[in-house]
Amino acid sequence: MSRGLPELMAGRQSLVNVGSFHSSALAHFRKQAPEITTAATQREVAKLYFGGMLKPATHYQYLQIPTSYFGLPLAPEWFIKKASQLNIQTVYWTINDIANMQLLMARGVDGLVTDRVDLACQLTGRSSS
Image 1 (cartoon, rainbow, N blue to C red):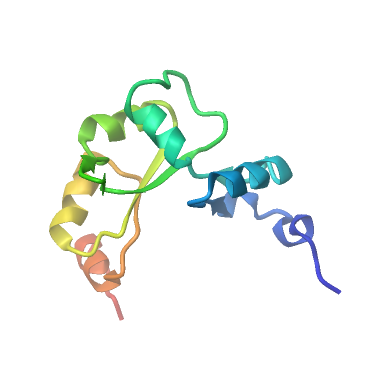
Image 2 (cartoon, one colour):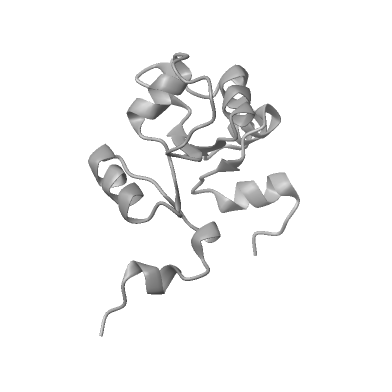
């Protein structure tokens, strides 16, 4: 017998965030599970970046984005601060060098996605073994 999302997620909603490159899939998920946080769609990121959003987000709580998109820098300090002021967490991917990890952390990001766990451990003073 397979269990549905409500049974699997019982008491775990705060541990999960859902993102997708497909806005229609994310819209469907938001309708089905409004209690689970989601990442912004590309359109929502653009609206935030270019100034169309001045109040806290209602449909998403995270930006899970690259540091740039087709040459547009998505990790300037002003953008990270703007998101933070609107209670939106910033998570950047895929950061695989220590210099960019340090730069983003200094700018106040909430999270980094990396393939280089050894470097992240080194940066945070933890052992990678």
